[in-house]
Image (cartoon, rainbow, N blue to C red; front, side):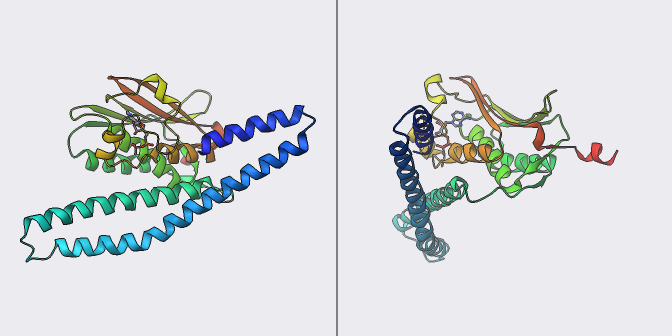
Amino acid sequence: RGARHDDLVLSIKMIAYGSSKRLLISRDITHLERIETMRRDFVANVSHELRTPLTVVNGFVETMQDMPNLENDMARRALQLMGNQTSRMESLVNDLLTLSRLENEQNTLHEEEVDIPKLLRTLYEEGRSLSNGQHRIQLKVDSEARLSGSADELHSAFGNLVTNAIRYTPPGGEIVVCWSEQPDGHTVFSVRDSGIGIAPQHISRLTERFYRVDRSRSRETGGTGLGLAIVKHIVIRHQAQLNIISEEGKGSTFSIVFPARRRLAGAAAASS
Ligand code: ADP
C-alpha cells in the first residue's frame, strides 16, 4: 500500500542517518523503491490491457440491449446485470490507470491558470445531475481567486469529494460546496454534507487504496474504493493539504487547503 510504503521508506531513511549501517539500509530502500515501481507498472499494464476487451464486451451488451426482438425477460435481466458489472469494471480500470499516472513521480504537474469559479459551476451542475433532485445542493463562492495548477486534476479531486458527499448522504440531506480564502492567503475548497458521517477510527485510513468503512454500501453506490486515494495524490502534487472533519450520523466536511503561492488574483482583481 502506497501510504504505508512511504511511511516505511521515511522511517528507514531517518534511521539510516543515525546509523553506522547506512550503506546496508540505503540498499534496502533502493530495493523497496524498485518493488514499488514494479508494482505500479504492473497495475498500470494490467489495467491498460483490460481496457480494450472491456470496451468490446460493453459495446456488444449495449447493442444487444437495443435489439427490438429481445423479448425474453431472463435474457433482458442477464444483459442488464452484465452491463452494470462491465461498467463497474470500466470505472475501476480507469481509476487504477489514473492512480498509477498520479503516483508516477516522473509525470510532472501540468500547471495552468485554473478558473475556479467556472470549475465550481460545472461541478455544481454535475452534482445536481448525479443527485437527481434528491439533495439540497448549495454553492458558496466567497472568493474570486483562481489557482495555478492542473485543471483536469483539480476537476477530478473536487468531483470525487462532491460525488462522495452525494453517495454518503441519504435523500433529503444537504450538501454545501464552498470556495473561500483565509487571511493568510490560503485558499480552501470544501464540501460539507449532512450524511452518514465517519467514525474517528476510520478517518486516518480513508485515503488508502480500497479502504471503505462499509464495503457493501460503497459497492451499492457505485464506488471503486479509489476516489480518496486519487484525491490524496492530487492534493500532494499541488502541495496542498486534505482535512477531514466528521461525526458519525451527522455528516462530514472534506477540505483542500492550497498554499498562498498557488493563489492567482480573481477576474475582477486582475482587471482592476
Ligand atoms: P468509494 O469509492 O468507496 O466511495 P473513496 O476512496 O472515495 O471510495 O472513499 C473511501 C471510503 O470513505 C468510502 O467507502 C466511505 O466509507 C468513506 N467516505 C468517503 N466520503 C464520505 C462522506 N462524504 N461521508 C461518509 N463516508 C465517506
